[in-house]
Image (tube, rainbow, N blue to C red; front, top):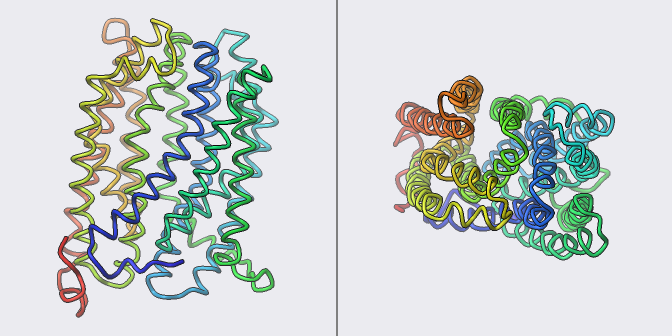
Length: 453
C-alpha cells in the first residue's frame, strides 16, 4: 500500500505517482465538466445558474483544504520516517476535522442559500431559481466529496495514487449515466445535474471507506482523538489553504464584476474555467506528486533528490503549459462550442481562453514550485505570494474592465497578470532557498542513493 519515494529514478517515481493523481483529478473535474456539457443544452441561463452556485461549492472545498493539505504533508513525512502509527493517528483526527468543517458549512448554505445567490444581483428570476435548487442539493454532496478527497490525499501521501483513480473512475461513470437520465428523461433540469452528482459522490465515499478505512485509520478501538494533531495540521495547512479561501472569496467578487456584463458573461466565465481546468488539473496532479515526493525525501534528508524532483517537474510544466497555450489560442471558439451555441457567450468565452491562455506556462511553474516548497514545510512563502497576487485581481479587474479600457476582457487580463507574477515569484523563492535548505551534502547517503533523472 505504501510506496517508498526515497529510492529509485526520480523522474520515474514522480511520473508513476503523478499519472494516477492526474487521472483522479480529471475524474473529479469530469463531474462538473459533464454537468456543464448537459446543462449547456438548457441554455446560457442554466449555465449561469450552475456557475454562480459553483463559487460557493468551491469556497467549501477551500475551507476544508486546511485539513486536507496539512494531513497530506504530515502523513507523507510520517511515512518517510517509517512511522505507521503516527500516520494513522494523524489520519483519523484529520477525518474528524473534515466532518466538522464540512458539516457546519453545509448547514450555512442550507440556511442562507438565497443570500449567497442574491449577492450576484442576477436580475433574472429563472436563473436565480435554478441556482437556488442546484446550490442546496449540491452542498449536501460536499460532505461525501470531502471524505473522498481526504482518502485520496492520504493515499497519495502514502505513494499509492492508483486506487483513487480507480474509485474516481467508477464515480464519474455513474455520473455520466445519470446526468442525461435525470436532466432530460426525468425532466429535472439543473436539479437533475445536482442529484446525479450527489449519488455518484455518495458511492465514491462508500467505496473508499470499504477499501481503505482500516488501513488508513486502524482498528476502531485504537482510534485516539486529540486536538494536538489537528493543531499541527492546521498550522501546516492554513498558509496554503488561506490562499484557496481568499481565491474563492475573490472569485466570488470577480463573479459579481462579471455579472454586470450579463448572464452570457457569467456563462462564458464558467465555461472558460472548466476548459482552463484541463491545465490546472494536469499540473495540479503533478503538484500532488511533487509534494508527496518532496515530503518523503525531505523527511529522509535526501536533499539532492528534492532538487532533482523540482527540475523534472519544471521541464514537464514548461512543455505542457506551452502546449496548452497553443491549444487555447488556436481552438478557443471550438472548445466553447462544446458547451453552448449562443453567439454572445461563445465570443466572450473564446476571448477568455485566448487571454488567460497566455499565462499557462507560468501557472504551471507556480504549481511545481509551490508543491516543492510545501513539501519542505515552507507553506507560508508561496501562500503569501499567492494571496497577494489573488487580491490584486480585484482592483485590476475593476480598472481594466471600465468601458473606456477593455470591458469584460479587462477581467481576463487581470487574471493573466496575476497568474504570471505568481509563477515568477514562487519559482524565484525556491531558487533562493535551495542553497540553504537543500545542501548537496546534507546527508551522508545523498550522493549514493540519489539517482540521475
